[in-house]
Every structure is written in C-alpha cells, then in structure tokens.
Image 1 (cartoon, rainbow over the protein chains, first blue to last red):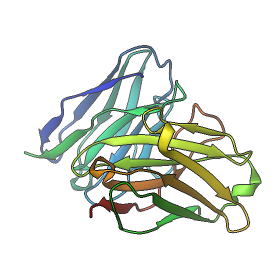
Image 2: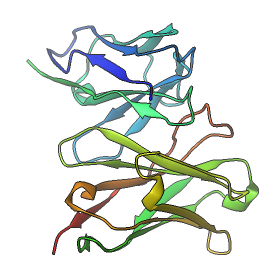
Image 3: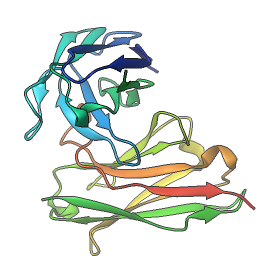
Amino acid sequence: DIQLTQSPSSLPASVGDTVTITCRASQTVRTYLNWYQQRPGKAPKLLISAVSHLQSGVPSRFSGSGSETYFTLTISSLQPEDFATYYCQQSYTTLWTFGQGTKVEIK
Amino acid sequence: QVQLQESGPGRVKPSETLSLTCTVSGDSISRGNYFWGWVRQSPGKGLEWIGVIHYSGTTYYNPSLETRLTMSLDTSKNQFSLKLRSVSAADTAVYYCARGGITLTDWFDPWGQGALVTVSS
C-alpha cells in the first residue's frame, strides 16, 4: 500500500493567514493526487484533483502543487469557512489511500 | 446535479452482515462511464477506501476487506450496494458512497452525506 503522510496533523491559524499542508507519499504517485475538505459532520468534498486542478466553485485561494512523492495544499487568506480537516488521496494504485488528515483550526 | 444517498440499518450485531445501498439521482449508473464506490470513516478517525464497482460489474476491493466484501449494482433502481459480512466493532463507522471517475486514476466526487453504522449487540 502507498502510505500518505500529512503534516502537520493540526494547524492553528487565524483568519487572513496563508497556510500550507504537505502530503508525502511512501512511493511515487506521479500526479494522481487529490485533496478533499471535510467540515465537521459533513462528507468530504473534492477541492483539487490531479495535484493542481481546482474544482468548479472552489475559491481561487486554494491551490495545489507537487509531483511524485511531495505535494502541498496552500490556502491563501484563510476565511472562516476554511476551518476544517483536509485530506490528500492517491489514485496511482488500485488501492486508493488517504492521508491521515490535517485539521486547520482557529488559533 | 448528481446526488447520492446512503440507506440501511444504523445498527448491526457482531458477526452479522452490514448492508448499505446508495441511491443515485441526477445521473444514470447504466450510462457506463463511471466507477461507483464506498469509503468509511471510523469515529474520530480518517478515511478508508473500501472499494469501487463499474457498470460492467468489475469490482476492486480493499484487500483488508476483500474476503468479507461484496459490491453490486441494481441499474433498474439506479442503486449500488455494499455487503460486509462477519462484522465486528472495528467496522463501526460512517459509510460514504461516492461517484468515482471514468478511470481508476481519478477521484471521488460527489459524495453522499454518509450513514453511521454501529456494530453492537
């Protein structure tokens, strides 16, 4: 299985901050790396597919980059609705795996 | 707009079979373009990929669940289902259904709202 390790696990931040979440894969996933946002009590929502493709309706303050084994999700100018848990997910192998999640919380 | 909705018992006894159905609206499973799948999330934990099924009937399962798992389609009802046998407390989770992509290298979008299943006697 490909392991995805996100850091940090918890990210205290304030409205207006720019934050970056990293996702490291135990082996290459090429560019088959996606990001989801999960708000409390809600289902995950796809934010970014294939490393950097922003989904329709997702604010442009979200951006993704990376390749092979190292990926980042950056949120510029955090808004109140951005406080949530974020997961990376790889689809390079048939067994899809998720990172353990990064909780962006209010400082 | 595609929407998915999970349904099934909220409580299952240990050693019995967990059965969930996902009803799809706004898209047709029989259109044949997508994979349809399941993900679960244990209380307070992260996301675990369970598996996917294609219109053709082809399935891909998480090896850790494969011996207990069956997924199926009912195109007449535009539904797909999950059966997990011999459950234990470790299977207690919120189960999400979701639409996968056209290929196995895609993603899940959209997701159902989730169904909490508790394994308890």
